[in-house]
Image (tube, rainbow, N blue to C red; front, side):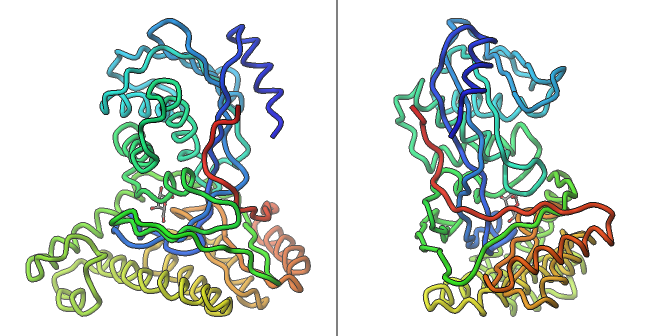
Length: 385
Ligand code: GLA
């Protein structure tokens, strides 16, 4: 990884050198919107991420410089004692990580940091989790002797989203970026945080992202989906007190309350229950090397996310449909939705032709080309030197 620009900018801005840290973005093969329902997910870390250089400054302020942000918005300073969030949204991620670590008893002192990344913004590959994690591993290293374990670091990132960034997300993104392992997907049980690595190098296939370039940003609409799920759980729990989340519910319980549940909430909960089964079916299929089943489930997830959970958009539906009619093994919207990428499991023999045709067809319809990224599954967050 070439960090020379970062080193130079840091030196110019702060007239010293710091330590370097890296945290990756993530993909997710299957298990979407299941994490905050205590279900299973199947993510992996990617080779793209955020690198930060960090050094103590002897003050009680944090001075931050974001290399990839427009110059006039790229520098933020905040005091470690201030209660109000910084006004630049990007700085709230770092502010939140500091505050969450302080809540856990870590004595954070003033520091200077600069960071840069190569996760395409709004692509649904979780640049926000990468930003939280690159700072949580740095601060853990500098101020806590690495005593905070990675499970807690993932929770620190998640709490940052909840308390400082307005997204009531699950734990998948932070977990994947911290626990990623080269060429492996992670089956994570979001209830217990038990996880298992699944080596993933499907012979004869490529895993490719196609970015619709519809900018996704999670907020109200994401939180509304989570609230739908919580309302359904509350109802079901009236007759089934053992049900604490949709993870504990089944289709029969949902149907029992069909008349009482708002139609939108019902569809959303149905999707989550179906998705829960799909993740487990994909794990079985992966163990048998049965990629046709993996692909079938990916398509079912797409149409579930589109028609039931309603987090897709015209561009993503077009890409999934095009893939399906082209004979691609599996394709679906990835991540929170509302834009970003489809993840595609493509037979190598079809890959180049499919990508070329999909790009042209997309451009004909929407007037711009999508971006294409070949997925390389990499390791989780780490110190670089
Ligand atoms: C976003 C959230 C995750 C997860 C996905 C959907 O990426 O941050 O917690 O809910 O959406 O699966």
